[in-house]
Length: 104
Image (tube, rainbow, N blue to C red; front, side, top):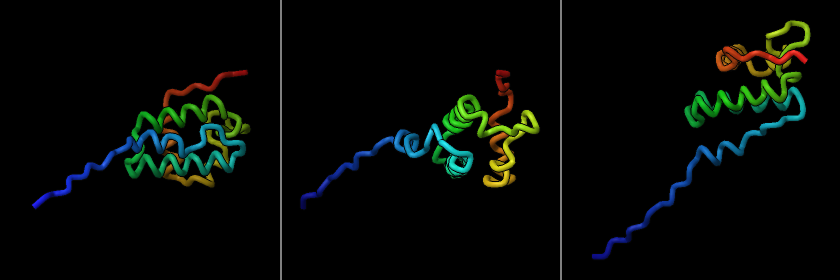
């Protein structure tokens, strides 16, 4: 009896998922969708904490006008808060702990 041995080639899923999220969304609503997707991936443990933190810090650094509120400095944009929900807001704020926005 001959056994067929087949090996499944396993690709690194983390690199594939890294490209499934937009790093440069063009609108606040699109940014909210990307944060929701990244948060869900983090909660379901398909994205590591380091990758999630790097993504949130990237959004904070390069898309701060979309992410943060104009009227209340240091708080998230109300549109972002309403779209992503209370639990994800807490998660994003936890990842932004220690982040300081640049004064331009």
